[in-house]
Image 1 (cartoon, one colour):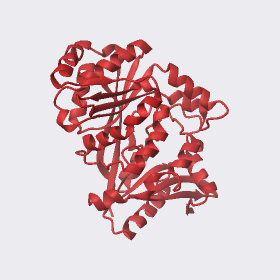
Image 2 (cartoon, rainbow, N blue to C red; image 1 turned 90 degrees about the horizontal axis):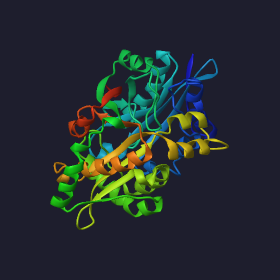
Image 3 (cartoon, rainbow, N blue to C red; image 1 turned 30 degrees about the vertical axis):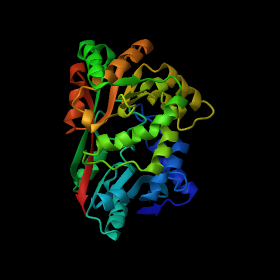
Image 4 (cartoon, rainbow, N blue to C red; image 1 turned 120 degrees about the vertical axis):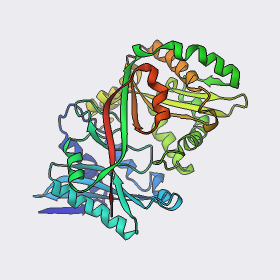
Length: 372
C-alpha cells in the first residue's frame, strides 16, 4: 500500500531533501545538493519566491519506507500575469514503481484542479533559475550543481501515464582547444568602436554587487521572449544575489557597458563543482567547504550558466566582446572543457552563438505536459 504524506514540519522537509541521497547512494553520476541550501529553498520565511508562488511537498511511503517525493508548485505570476493556467511539479524522485509516481502526481493534480488550472508541466522549479527537466539522454555523464540527474525510468513513467513532451533542452560541450579566435578577436575591436562599448571585468566579488540588480533587469529583458520565461521579481533579486554570487569566481562574471555606462550584455560562468559536491555529500562541514573552495580555484572545467544581451544589441555581434574576455581569462587559468547548461532546443539564437566551436550535444532533457 502506498501512502502520501505532506511534508510540513522541519523534520519532514529534511526527509524530503535527503531521500535522493538514499535513492542514488554511491551513484557515480548523481551530484548531491547541499542539504542546508535545499532546506533554505523550501523555507517560506527565507525564500522570497513564496511571495508569488505556492508549493506543497509530498513524500510517498511503502512498507513504512520513503519511496518517492514530489513538489507541487503554482507560480502565481505565471498564472495571473501570463495567463498560463499551469501547475508545476518538481524535485521529483522515485523508485522504479509507476504506482508511486502515479500517487505522487495525483497530489499535483489536486492542487491544480482546486485552483482551476488547466494543465500540469514538469519537472521544473519555481523560476527559470531553478533546475529543469527529466534527463532523457546522457545517463552516463556526471550531473552538475544546476541540473537534476535521474534514472532512465523517470521518462518511461511519465509517458506511460499519458504525458507528452512540452519543451526539449540540450546540454552541449566543447574542449577549449576548439575555440577559434579568428571569429571574435578582430570583430571584438570593431564592435567596441562602432557601438562605443566596453567590457567590464572583476577580481573581487564586492565590486560586482553594485551591478547585480542591473544584470537581473537585463536578464528579464533579454529572456522575455522565451515561452517558458517568468520574470525575476525585485525581492528575488536580493535573494539570488546572496545565494549565487559568492559561489562564482569574480573573474567569471563579464559585463558589457555602453558609452553611458548602461549594461547591454552580461555573462556568468561557473567552475564545475560536480566532483566537489560528490565529495561533500551534502554538507559544507567539516570538509565540504574545502572541496568546494578547491574546485572554485582549480577546476579546469567551466559551465556557461547565463548569458543575456539587450534586445537592441542582439544582432550587433556583442558576443564577440564576451568571448574575447573569456578567452583571455580561460587561457590564463588553463581551462580544458566548456559546458553549456540546458538551453531550449528551439532557441536558435543561442545555438548560433557557439557554432564555430563545434559543440557536441551530450545530454538531453525535457519537461512533460498533461491536461488536467
